[in-house]
Figure 1: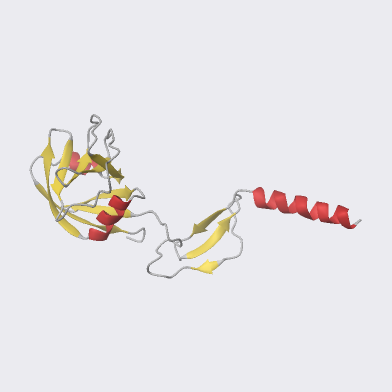
Figure 2 (figure 1 turned 90 degrees about the horizontal axis):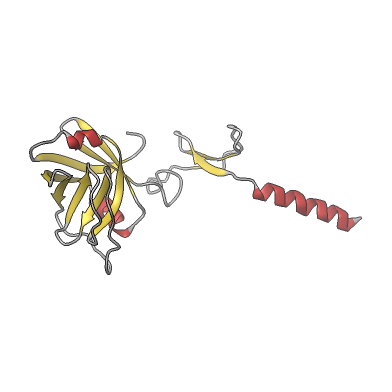
Length: 180
């Protein structure tokens, strides 16, 4: 009898543990487990740590690029180079058009590039770092593969703002949080 009850408990536990649940953080900073049925379970913690903006240590890092009064929102990939760029912000940069394909700007100092780069074949909307020159490259056209390009992130919104700039233009690049 005890073995039957233990078996039932173990099977129940396995079914519960195998379900897909995601921890979510709402706008008030409360985290909860999303049960998949649009309901909330008990609040597990209140997230107010200023170093932990989204309730986890690995929140999605975003940048806001302001051109005049227009915004470009960028999501950064989880790479050391992207983290270093994020930590540099805020920055005031001058961008220029390069080759009718990308807008480039030189950073105040080079990003640390450990070892050789994997390179990439950028698409419109990609934000890259060109290691030999030490510049950011925001692509508004697809481009060919380059060994020296490091993919930093992608433009979520506002790519058209960059495309519409025909002369050199000033940009404020800063960290972006969802509350803005």
